[in-house]
Length: 254
Image 1 (tube, rainbow, N blue to C red):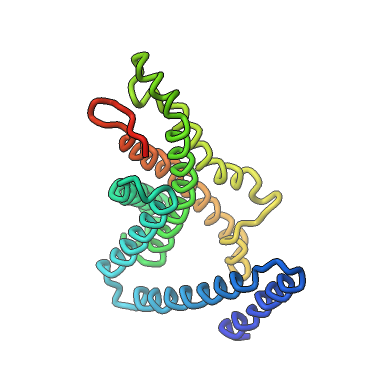
Image 2: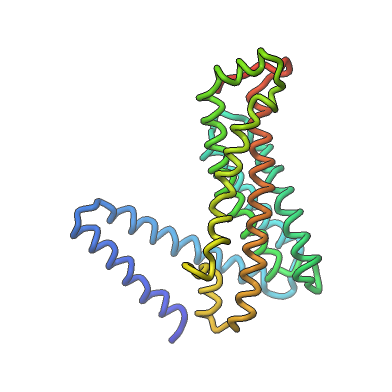
């Protein structure tokens, strides 16, 4: 059956979910329909854009532009979820840029080794995976860290008055925030293959990929996610605490 027709038939699952929500009076009908409509529109647009990017002759400038757009959107979404009051958008952009470059460069040069560095079938998926992990981890860590610094201002100021540096005063809160951001990836790595099959692996198997090859790719993706999440949370939380102190090492409340 044609893939487009299969996707249309899959809409039946959303309609069934809407019917169940209406039957149980959950009030989720509008949200489900809106989310489904957005998914169809957004993924359709992405599909056409990627078709242009992947079509020969492949332009490195166009590929980098696509990744730059993804990075900017990811940074803005992350900033909005953490706090719109903190002027950390440039820092988040820089953090995501460093995370993406370091992670993707390692995977490209050491693991994948494509013929050209800008080969889109490797560069764009890898960049998108790194950024999606960075959004989730940085949002969890950043929001928890921001809340902790505001909620424990008195304790932090006490540490400062006793001679602690700002970095020492907020060290425990930052460590807990980073752990919260990285823990979902660690949990996913711990149970993968036992209780769950990752979406990427399942998608490859549905597409007819060789199970061994699909598993090897999934391992690369998991390790890529683990490294990128840790690096992103480290950089983003570093930027947050720096905005909480002035040049005299005094705490600023946001």
